[in-house]
Length: 337
Image 1 (tube, rainbow, N blue to C red):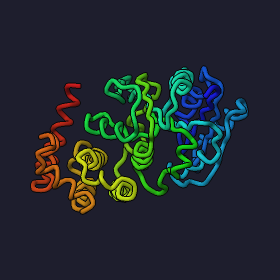
Image 2: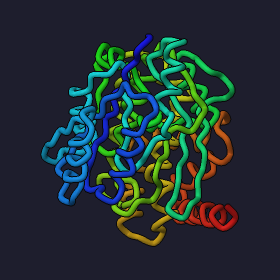
Image 3: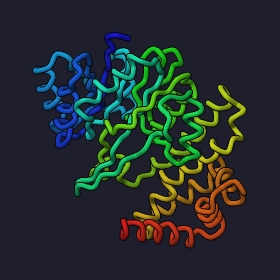
């Protein structure tokens, strides 16, 4: 590929305080062969006006305005309007490094890949910043190996935002975001990695992921958090249809258990340990058979680390101690961070 074009897909919903920083980081790329599809998903603040002002100054920006349908539908709409060889999903409260595309294209010119993963920083408003590793010293690998190794090594990131994916690859495998649910990234990323023949890895932190934004989806507690259970079902069905031999694989069980635990079962006790509503949601998740079988596996498995076995066992047999353990662990961790 001599002249690689990258399409940025940016879903926008009520982010007037952040979207300018996001768009500045994209339009200011040192590599010019890009297009930017901004999907306004029914914003009720000034986000759309800001986006249109940027589009009036830069012809590479396409604005898609639609009624609110959720993040998945917005990303899918953006994919339909993208014209690049590769797709990069960037959330509108995040931003990317100014030379990201230039560095990424230099890799794509030398090696063909279905997915290219880049390093990322998680950052907080207080200036704190944490780097998330994406590899174990390799530069390229097949998708299934990457999925397995990152999960077992504890460095897997479900986010679609630090994955640059080949447009034709996504179309060929009919990979889309699942509309109508939260936590949609995992299912999309899982499909991509399970199908990818080649995954390139660039350790540099080109993506900057904002943490604890007020009003963000992941920063609030709601009934819809139980959508993680639907994601479990989607993953199980996808594996059964495409790679049934993985259904009983340890890494797959680690993925399911860890994903749901971190998304709901660990998140709520550390933030709202005395909330009846939060604890009811956690208990509903733990009682659901789609997830409970994975909890039982980790409560008794000799292959599981003790740090996973203990909370699994307590969540099944002594819920109050489970909440106390999770709350105490994260409280202690935050004091000495």
